[in-house]
Length: 166
Image (cartoon, rainbow, N blue to C red):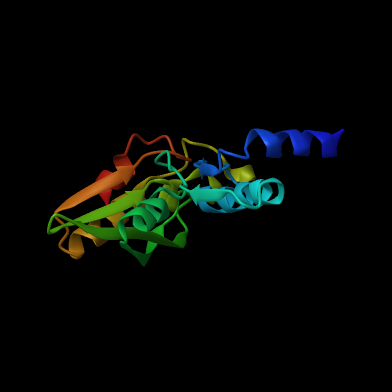
């Protein structure tokens, strides 16, 4: 049955050989880039001649900055920050150039995301966005003209008060 289905798919797609794979990430398991590569590998197993374009998408959460840097040719900057539980972590933001202007991209997930909060410490009243403010400050130190912040994947509930304090 499986082999017959694969043959049917190959016949149907014989003339349609351009495929765009555009997934978002899978929370706490795969980034958008990893998901795109795995899906593409599966498609190539069935349609080895297909022209496949991988376009990982971001919803503003985990992976948003890396996806934006890949799309714009920007650069990731690693910086220390305060994680959502108050412990120091290594975080990041990106910078790309658009029409001569330096644009910083950061994501809340990189400093206050749910994946940074151990399961036994998931209490949104005890977590902070302070690290997000530190990322904003680090981006401003690079003399950027604009800052884009992806707000998905928060492990906090302080309404940005921590970010404002930083």
